[in-house]
Structure formats: C-alpha cells, structure tokens
Image (cartoon, rainbow, N blue to C red; front, side, top):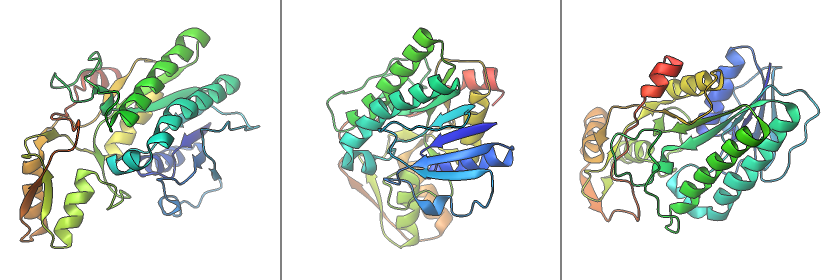
Length: 287
C-alpha cells in the first residue's frame, strides 16, 4: 500500500511517516520546507520512502497508484501562520483542493489534518465535534482558523458530491521530539526558556487552559481514523486539562531551575479553553 504524507517533513508529519513505514507502507513525503525541516526525515533509511519537494498549492501529478493521502501540509504554530498569513490561507484552500483532486483521480482515501482552532475561543468546554465554534474570521488568527474550516467544508463537499472516501481529524495541542524550540507553542517555549535560565513568559493571567497529547499517541489516533469508516470530524487529543500557569510551574519544577514567571498581554483572540471531548475517538477507534 502506498501513502502520501503532505507536510511530511514537519513535526507531526515526520512521525506519521515513521509509523507508516514501520507498518509496511510505501511512503511519499511531500513538503516545501516552508515550516518543515529536512532534519526531521534525514534519519529515514528505507527503499520504501521517497521525498518530493513541492508546494501543494500547485497541482501534484504522480503516475503511481496511490492508496492513502494524509494531508497535513500547513503552517501550524502561531508564529508561523502570523508570519505566513497568505501561504496559510492558500494551503488550506488551494492545497486541500489539489489533494482532493489527486485523491479523486487516484481513487485514494484522503485524511485532512484539521485543528482544534476551528472551535476558535470556545464558549463550551470540553469541545465536542458538533460544536460549530466561536471564530473571529477577520482577526489575526483567522487566517489559520478559517483556512482549516474551509478545508473541512471542501473535504465534505468532495465526499458528498463525488463520493470520495474522506476523513477529518481535529488535532489538539501535541508535543514531542522534533518540535522547533522557536515555533511559538507553549511546550517548547517554556522548556527552552527554563533550560536557558530565562524567565517563563505567560500571556494574560495564565488561567487559560490547554491539553497536551504526546505525538506518538496523536499519530496512532490519526492512523486509526484513516483506517476507520467514519467520514465526519473526530477530535484527537488529550482530555486532561491544565492552566498555562500550572504548566509553567510544572516545567520550572521538572527542570530544577530558578526561573520566574513574567506576565504579558494576552494575544488577540487567544482561546481561553482548549479541551477535547474524545468520546467519538474512544467509541469509534478504540483510542
């Protein structure tokens, strides 16, 4: 079986390539390295693995039979999508359209990597898949939120109109090896600051919550969803919720440093709560 992983040189994508290779798949990694890194896949030494440097906002033509497309390509950290707003919107719209077209041409099953950001700054907690979200479409974070919401919409349109086999995963906060220290997300931010002996930066009063899922658990859930027969969105994330302030203190304690916590203004539209309801993942995927 042959699988394409777009964004395969990224943090989550590279771990997904590893999992697929370990399970006997032939894997084609597609990435333009705008936020991914060749370092994330340089350890792979397999005849079953190939890499194509390509921007999926442009059509991708492949002669071979394709069985599965895991579409993960997108800037995903606040620093990245705030610096690359147009590219983020284009990969959500044009990139998803191109990958759906490829899946249709190859009669392949396609999984869209969506995000908990489709819920915006949620007014319900935990977030269930049926919740439509509270998103500011013209705010600075809207470039990512709306790119993913559009990507979900066009994916379901292809499913309903063309009968395409589609899957949609809503990924919540994920951490683990190969995260960039400077990617702007809370786990590498806090760990990097603590190891350098710097104070930890908490935005707002630290009462906002996040839930962190280890990357190997995340990609197992993604894989199980792809292999399921369920076409509507499914949350994959850790339902254990921590405040940012609590998490900062955990990092200071674990690194054994003497860092202090400094507070800065909360960014625009920063979500106050983030906690997945994973009832569907438990019931449908045994995850």
